[in-house]
Amino acid sequence: MGAEVVTVSTDSKFVHLAWQKSEQELAKVKYTMGSDTTGNLSRMFGVYDEQTGMDLRGAFVINPEGVLLNAEVNFYNLGRNIEELMRKFKANLYMAKKTSEVCPAKWKDEGDATLSPSPSMVGHVHEALGKK
Amino acid sequence: MVESIPLKVGQKVPSFEIETYNPASEDFGTFNFEKAKADRKWTILFFYPADFTFV
Image 1: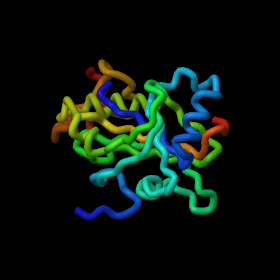
Image 2: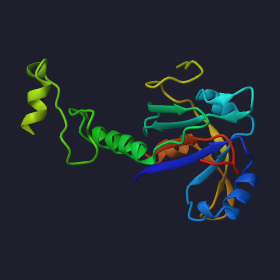
Image 3: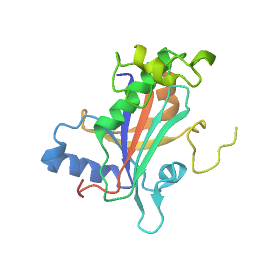
Image 4: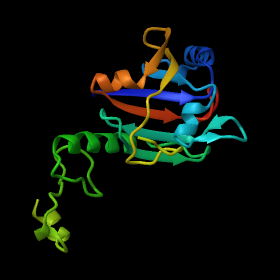
């Protein structure tokens, strides 16, 4: 899909290897597993926990121009919803191609209604969504 | 082009490189952010607390 997905924890690359090979749940994992043993990258994104030396559950989407477009951070006990992450990523990809359109709150996939902001739409978003 | 740490949405992400394990090739390597940009790729970073834990 034109994206590099990299998972990151402060574990070493050796621990990643051991974990991926021993945990059946990860047997099918193909994405790159990054190792931030110094915590420098994690601090850059604001997810490093100085008390524990571990990372919070953060997910970040960066476009090919290097701009950070999305950030989501959860505390340790809440897993992220992959569907929501994919929804955001697909929305970003779509809008990168159609720069005059924006994805409203209920947008899920290509083909769903979008909005093309203009002065005539001000105060009339309800009608704009209803027409499509 | 000075970014404040931590990064905010909308800011340009500075260059970075990170050591990696690639399960597909069973190999160690590095992920270079500049290279991903040069290849016109989106980068999705997914941070998590620790290997061998749950959720």
